[in-house]
Image 1 (cartoon, rainbow, N blue to C red):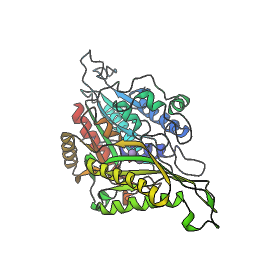
Image 2: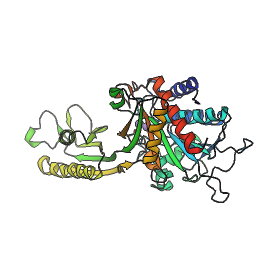
Image 3: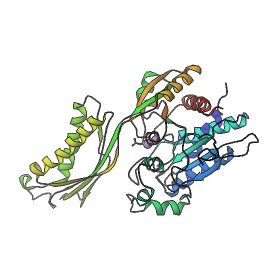
Image 4: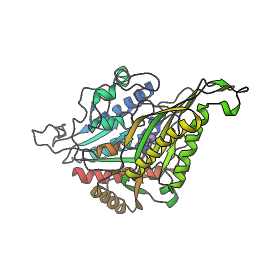
Length: 421
Ligand code: GLV
Ligand code: MN
Ligand code: MN
């Protein structure tokens, strides 16, 4: 049984992990930043070393194209629509990160995708279908919203021009930043029509580690709703203003966070909610805030339940206007419905795990993923490996080497089978 080169996989994960380290020691590889460029340059180098051609589209998605003919020359990657070449099997993830990130989220899936092509090529195997490796732009959505942006544009769910015009949290424009870092490519997003798409990723949650399961066959993914909320109150003196006379934007914001937690508890664990950013104005110790701006991340695997949670949260903002005298507004900055992945690919993942003697369970992805957008245009599924203690979006994010290698081997088997390698 052919296996990937585990040493090379780990060396590359670690090398990519050393990019994007800020002067304060935190890993911050935000989309289209200098740090992202550093990581992208490495990915492109490895794609070429693996014998693939690099292509970049207008939203900055990077593709490694391997479409060898009998002589090993690169032929049509199966999307010209005229020469009859079969459509490619695509696999990949993202390399942008959150703030103070770990080194595995997204990066693992991209590095493993390159590794599997290199493994097949070194073994002299020529797949019937082209294999394409992808690294999508701005999966995290920390700097520019919405998240999963590159894959969303690729799948036709967001217009390229609209995405390029996104203004970041730092006031930059994504399109300008992609030009600046040299990753505003010429290809039209969607230029390769995949036959199937598979994403390998760390679980980022505690289930597999707790159960001692090696492989997750991801069959669905929960819905995600993001809002930016602004609450306006009245700025006043912290010492002299009687409690009954306050219109405190900070207090109202805190109440929203408590309200969301109560909804989560009442949902029996189905709903999760996070207030991950919060800014007060004027932000001074002895001044009642006149403004609070914060984000709400709401998730639920069921679309109707997620809609109900959104309504409850928006109704609560209106209620606060009556009870607390504040003004509120909420802007929806990202929204994804729950996604059901392709059952046949899920079966293939389970069979591939069994053939390697690995334990496997079906999973729901709690995290947003590029795969959810690729599912809009072709049969798609995901493979998970365990995250130790379920820690992610944190520098302590860790997955064991043997689990990463096992996951990459399952990806190798699934892609080989789909590509006829
Ligand atoms: C992506 O990491 C997400 O927010 O789920
Ligand atoms: Mn990810
Ligand atoms: Mn992430």
